[in-house]
Length: 147
Image 1 (cartoon, helix red, strand yellow):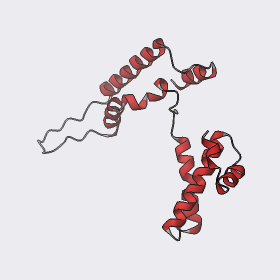
Image 2 (cartoon, rainbow, N blue to C red):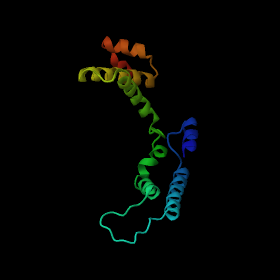
Image 3 (cartoon, rainbow, N blue to C red):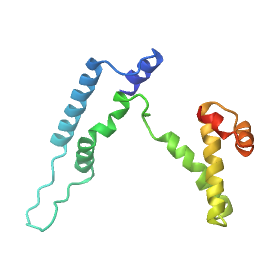
Image 4 (cartoon, rainbow, N blue to C red):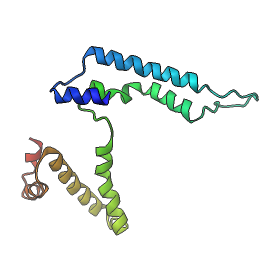
């Protein structure tokens, strides 16, 4: 799915053809069915109260079936990335800051740090120089990033 989407993006398309959407949908369902057959729910002899224990693989297959729309959203909406690596990278600097200094001294200081990192991250993603973005934000012209 990822490779087909990347090729479509390279060609300048904004969506996949119905052929690929149907093909991927069918294959996804086949794989979930195969996972269910190869990993059946364990049988319990004793009658216990509550929900039956599934195990890791059947629970994963059930979640993948339940959230199919969210898992496959990246092939239907090209604005959705394949993975969440960018979000993890954005949070990493906050974690590094707290590891190095131990913590933020005040809540206001934490907010200021997050605002500046947000400005830098947005500028970088929009293709602007971080220094210029901060300089413009301080001088009151931060809206140039969001034009």
